[in-house]
Amino acid sequence: MGEAMEDNAVVYVGDKPVMNYVLAVMTQFNKPVSSVILKARGRAISRAVDAAEITRNRFMPNIVVKDITISTEAIPNEEGKTVNVSSMEIVLAKQE
Image 1: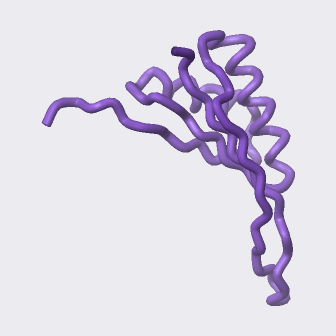
Image 2: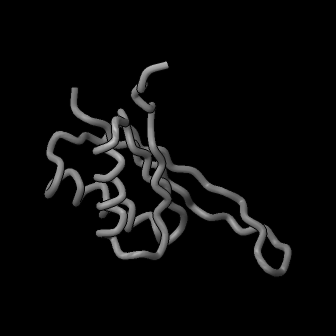
Image 3: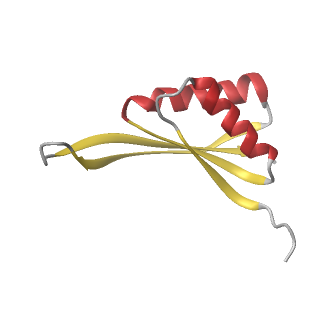
C-alpha cells in the first residue's frame, strides 16, 4: 500500500501556552493530513479558539474552519458526583 493521505489529526488543547497548540496544528498540516481537529473542554475552550484563529490569520491563510461542534460531557468529580463540562471541537481544513 502507498502513502495514503491521512484523514484527520486531533490536537487536544489543555493548559499549555496557545503557541504550543498553534505549532502542533501547523506540524500536523505539514504532514499529509486533510484536516486537524482541535478538541478542548472547560476553560481550555478559549485557548482552542485562540489557537485556531492565530493559525488561520497569522501563519496559514489557506486554512478554513470547516466545522465547530459544541457539547456537554458529564464527568465524575472527586466526591463521586457528576459535573457537566462544556466541550468543543474545531475542525480546520485546507481550502480547496
